[in-house]
Length: 405
Image (cartoon, rainbow, N blue to C red; front, top):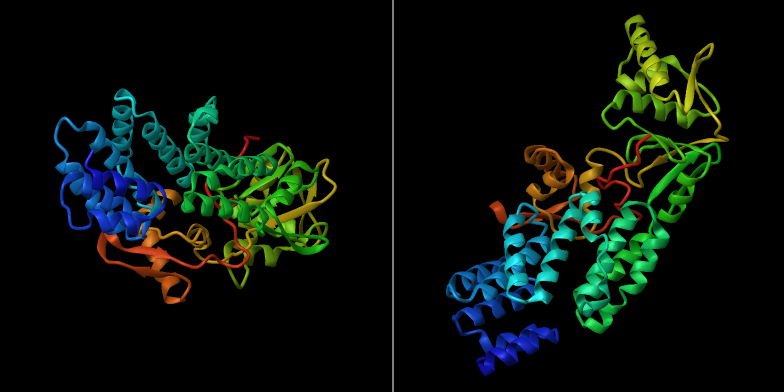
């Protein structure tokens, strides 16, 4: 190996990108381009880093398949960091297979975990969990062990298994031995999520803020929970999803907030349909929707008529509470994703939210006009970000499957 390339590579491994650039900044051969790309990524210039890595991949000859594959893996890591989630995952899979076939197990493992982390970001928790199952991190490098535990913790957080998440993050202390500041920062960020407010609980006792572990205990209790974070009604393991029935969920939430009292019909109409003044057609429609809600919640609760309205009567539950996001209002889901402090493209947000890019762009324009988000870059390089919102953590707002009722 070229001595300068070797010294630059050791500088990068030690977390000294400036030291690496001093040795290869004026060189345009393929190894130097690759090292410059990695150095620029460590310095935060992701756009320049991506361009350098692509040049390096093209510059490596046909017999240097391992070097080209490593460039692809590095570019995939930059895409994940910049939330370019539309980056072709198939290219990463091909690069990983090449590295495994050529015996570079360290970088092949790194590529595998990059794919798992991408699955977590876009909410495909089941796929990530299946891919992680059975993998023993004992034989991995310190950096790969840390990444393994971060993925394990990410799955546990989205499953609301906070004890397992804390154990995984404790094992991820290997990040310090790996001497990679970015990994150490990720571990600390995940720890903060576990201790940050995750939701607001409303009920007879008023309103209070809950952490993730308190939400987990609430879900395991006998309480009937109207969950406005994921639009479900649940008691313990029995879950009824109303995510695709917004009218029924609006009714359930209004009734849950008033429990053990009732809600007048005119107020229910106004909250559910947004209609004022209320006439007989609205009341008729309300009766129809209440009947549908009564049928859907049959295993969990009844909806009984009272002289002035309707009331929620739970089956085998001592209380009814409403679990609300820490921040509500228009485009709360977009703000939840941006609340992680990373820079997102509108296409990545659309992929993570399972909606159209145009819908996301309209939401971002509205939030920008209100001063809640900001953008930088132009065209495909445009990214959106916001400082982490005080008291906001995202796991309860992120897409994740709930157990079936």
